[in-house]
Image 1: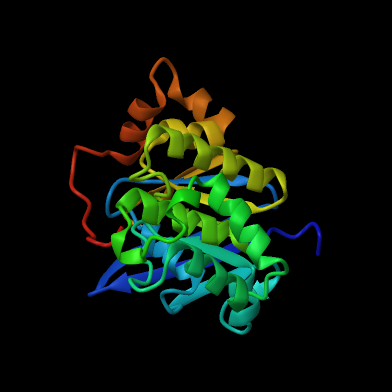
Image 2 (image 1 turned 45 degrees about the horizontal axis):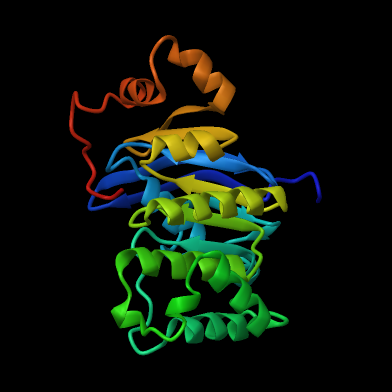
Length: 251
């Protein structure tokens, strides 16, 4: 099983109101690999990540996480996964530190207190450890969600716009943490509109348009297709962004 992908998605399909948000999508992510998931608004990125995380029930297709089938073995799959949504919403009445300890108890993390302290320092949250969730800014909520994701040492990490709301120092810390997680063998799916961060971190790209794959390949293959233009120009051309609006409201 060591040669099997950490994440395998086969024929993932999901619709809303008669329209397909994700249409027969298949891809794999290996241990230690960062997959950059790109696409304009409405391309199906968030729907894809929510489906893989088990937040949305499966309609069609299969998802295997660290050898666990998401439908037949949801507990095993979810215990191997960390999910950071695009706008995390912590509990209003719990402090930052209580969120960390609560997660540590739920996942039965050994030395949860020590690991929580380490991660609060890594994500520059130590000074906010006694702050209630209701009082956190967008950037602080994002940092807390990242710290909770790292707490479990997941096999697969799903990150939906994880850098949004962070200041330059926070972006640098988050990028370093993502690179370190991959170096330790975690498979990372990174969805972001910050193309420079994706280019710096991703081993491969998967670009969606209206729920379908329009490009899948390594960063070198993407650069070879760029020609004289930069990544942003190539991305806009690949997705026809600006020429016609996305048809589906779900991202």
